[in-house]
Length: 497
Image 1 (cartoon, rainbow, N blue to C red):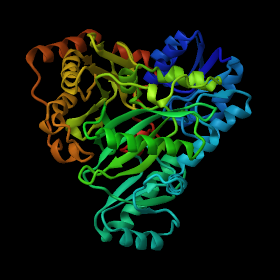
Image 2: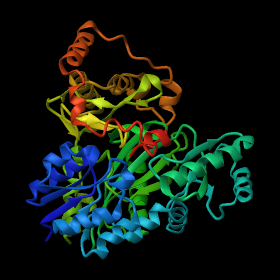
Image 3: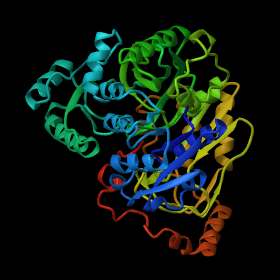
């Protein structure tokens, strides 16, 4: 039995896992850095263990410190959340070697799908469609020759990567060497591995993923798709389900391919198989598998009624799936918007500072997942995701209308967020028609600027600043993190979960 779990993460996902554990009468232990000493996940957990300084490499990425915290806390299992060490096979092995349960797939599955070159080879041998590409060798002459054979534009991407990091689109052969070098630098920094692979770049593609659940007895199902095409710099900001693009036939084909992909690596627990789809030919190709819980998992929960975190826990303690593929049904439409601490009008520049006031929408069909509350201090040490707003409606139009109403009620004072930008996307004719591709933001929203603030809002901002002053910063001795030379926001412009 799993009676006590350590959550090796922070922010909204740590809080989300704690709530699932509480419903199952499982005690929770969290870890925290100097910067998170007063964070919400520390306050919500039953027990909190300090593991180091603010930079992630000294705390949330320090495997030995997390394992020691787990041993001291006498937990039965470790949940990695997403980001940080969630897809690190070495961490999963360390957890198991410590005699603890790992709430996720096996180290073998993580390694097999984490290495993009190996994953492509496995998918190809399993009959899962893959994007034409090259992964056999890594030297520049071989890669350049392969690019000519594949045809430009090509995508240079990290072999050990994921999450939109260390990717370069090359449209001109003269730019190949420079793009290759840049991708290698980012891959080395983000993953400690400079290897890259090539793929044909499918312009105007749709990004569609399938949620997988698999138990330890060979039962594997999918919980339908999520459309994730609305992205900035390869990073998702709005997701929805069902996809406006898929019909029943294509959905069935892609679902079967997703299950086959999971079975190819003997996958267990929750995972996501990601595809790109050519909206013209309706051909789809395997992109990657995320061997963890996804940020956007709540829309699947809203649509199907399954609690994915609780099923992660149930599978980890040896339970069988209690349902078959034919017994999984959907109702309505669900959309998630990610509220980030950033300024879309200034190139999505990250924001840091105090949360002077946070008011979350509360209305039918709306769910909010957050890791911050009024009085918290947002730093640039970690991912800038603040709140996820999830809307469910009987139809797509209904879900969009509810999301727009929820974002209108959303209020966060003290730092810049992307809520106005999200509203602009939701009301854009291309999005409303269900035709947005992965190029949508770059092509149709690049010149976006917010409307001038109404006087009442401006006065509220001034009043809040005067009322709070800078006193709130005294509760954050670490500061914003902007002076940390290792901050991912300073070293990697694509840093996101």
